[in-house]
Structures are given as structure tokens and as C-alpha cells.
Image (cartoon, rainbow, N blue to C red; front, side, top):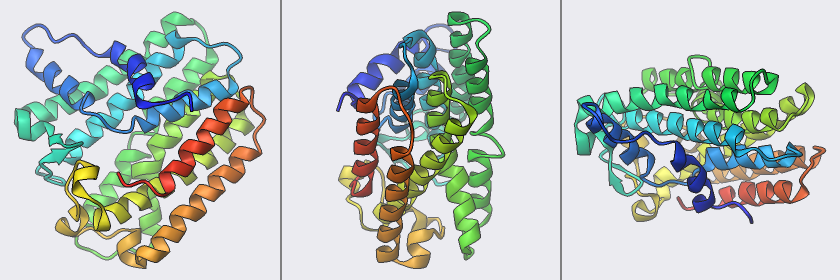
Length: 295
């Protein structure tokens, strides 16, 4: 497989802000959280989709968007970990942002990453002025993480803490809180690769299946996972009185659901016409690796 964490980080780290000036502390907190590790799943999925469809590679276009999607993901984790939400002290095996820098700087670091994500992605406009594909990608970046996407899912997740959820509510949370950012990543990669509207819709279906499988596997690991491998506390949902697919339907049903969603993603992927078959093969390998992941 051509794609690994190091390859992705070589691209996205180039876009981090320099730690200087009176605002140095908040930039340090931003970079600390961004560099804390992780699977780099979203920028990796974006690059895979871009490579599947792009006949010519241009890192000056795809690179800023890869960094931007990871900045948005990192900001969401910083805010998720805050005392007002999940109140977690460990993330990716290290102290969370507020545990290290204080709640005030952590809030500002999250705000800073979100803002800097859009500033970073906008560099692509300079690399290719007048590109409609870049315009569409930027719309996706500014929309899917918001109130009709990731934040919308987080809102229902927060207000339903301690209350039982039905399947419609669980699905809404998973599609928005988790899958929306994965859809965003893959959609942007495909758009920058020059796909048509129909292909973009099919990429959205694949991404939604991946997002749903990923979240339910997360739910499973929160119950039976190894904290040392996960790099974060287990039983966090139990602590915060949150229901999810695994707690409502049981572990075996949850494992079956993850497998079914992953198979659906592969089925849709097989139906696509792509430029780079190796990239499609690598995407399938990545999807399959998510089924039995332990972190």
C-alpha cells in the first residue's frame, strides 16, 4: 500500500503555523494537538480519492485541503475533550489539550484550528485560479463540518446524554457527527480529481458506509478496547451516560453492522470507473483494515 501515516504527515505538516509572536502559546497548543498522532484517516481518504480520479497530480491543490480536513478534525477533538463535553484527560496517548494548556487556551486552540483550516485550504485558489472544482471542494469543507453535518450530530449527542436513543437518532448522530467529515474528505478528493456529479454522489455513499462502520467500531472499542492501544480512556460513553449502536443492540449485532457497512462500501467502490486502479485497491485495503481495528 502506497499510503501510510508518514506519507500523509509529510504533506500536511508543511501547512502548520509558525510558533511566533504574542499568540505563540495558542499556536503551540494547536500544533501540539495536531501533531499528537492518530490514523490521519481523513486526509488519507482524501488523497486516495484524489489519486483514483486525477490524471495529473498537483500537491499545491490537494495538500492544503488535506491539512485543512485534519485541522478541522483536530479542533473537534480538542472541543470534545473539554470538561463541558466529554471531560477526557487523555487523547492519542497524551494529555488532552486542556489538560496540558488549560481550558481557556484549549478553547482558543480549537477556534484557531478551525479558522486556520479555511485559510489553509484557500491556498488552493492561488494554485489554480478560477477552478470550479476547487470552489465546489471549498463549499464542502465549509458546510459538512457545520450545523447540517458534524456539529449537528454533536448537538443531538450532547442533548441526549443520559436518555435512551431510538435507531433514527443513533443513525442521525453517526451520519452527522462522524460520517459527515469522512464524506467531506472523500468528496473533496474526488472533486479535485475532476469527477462528475453522479460519481461524486457515489463517493458520498461509500464514505457514509465507511463513516458508519468506523463509528460503530469505535463504540465497540469503547466497551471492550485496550486503553493502551486506543491512547484514550475506555468506557467514556458509559461515564457520560451516552447510548450508541453497540450499547443499544449489543456487541455481536454491532460487529455484524460494521462488517455489513464495510462490505457495502466495497460494493459501491467496485462499481466506480477510476483512473488509478492501484489507488482503488489501496482504498479497499484501508476499508477492510477498519473492520477489525483495535484502535
